[in-house]
Length: 343
Image 1 (tube, rainbow, N blue to C red):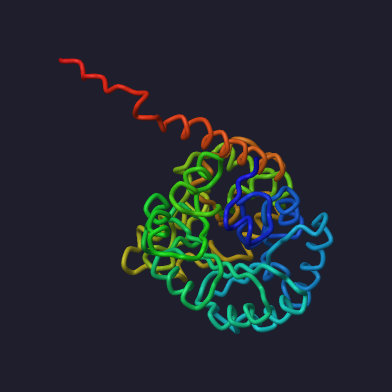
Image 2 (cartoon, rainbow, N blue to C red):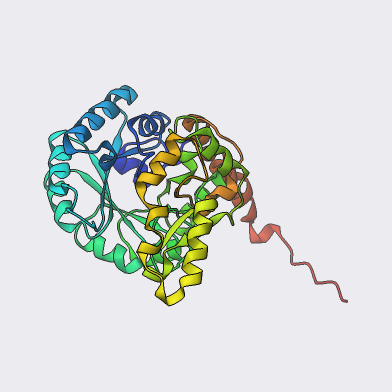
């Protein structure tokens, strides 16, 4: 029997599992594979390059989604060293293409959320703290994605893990929220639901699937890794990024440590720039550039299809809830306290 939550009802999906928007890998093919498996796949529209290419990506994703299953579009709003991306044009395209679900991330999306709500679009916003989450709830987001410190990419500077963050969400929020960061199996889905979340948001775990466009060398490294094989870089700049521990990440870590308080972004810009990362992907060189990965890599031991992954996670969640957790609740009249043995 499927897991039914406020998230599945609001989004019209079979399982409370969302693929978060991701730079590079957030393609129509991966998003559609997740949606077709009963979750919610999300494309990152900035991956398309331009707003009009983004329109084509939306249409391609829709064409790949069987029987009209839902999908989402991610709009990530980040500071820019040069001219900012044409966010307003991306928003216009999303509305014109009748997208029904949008995930926002990064800087305050309030003005965009207002436009999405006027177009009857469901909005999800990623937050790394309760204060950000309650603020987002205040300006009208429909769903909050609570990102714990375990997550890939930008975990923020507050270092709050999901065991506390999700429980705080249950106390502080009235809108449904997703447990995001470090999620990779069904036991964690059961735990997230027990803590108060209505679903989970997965990123890194979907990168280690057949449909992801990352090279096999990247996927194999994740499969071989442990939960300690990530690096928190750029901490001294208050711009923390969690990435996979490869040769380049270790070099960045060493430079940042050696420079100490004198560390500047320019010291490592040549190592961490996106162009180098994309070239590493093209060359299938897992040590050639920086790539994001969360601590969930410690749970990755297979490279399944998205359907195999989601089916397995849901079954494990159901089994955990029905057998392990349900079996722990006993009728007091049927049990007798046993005295402790004397030492």
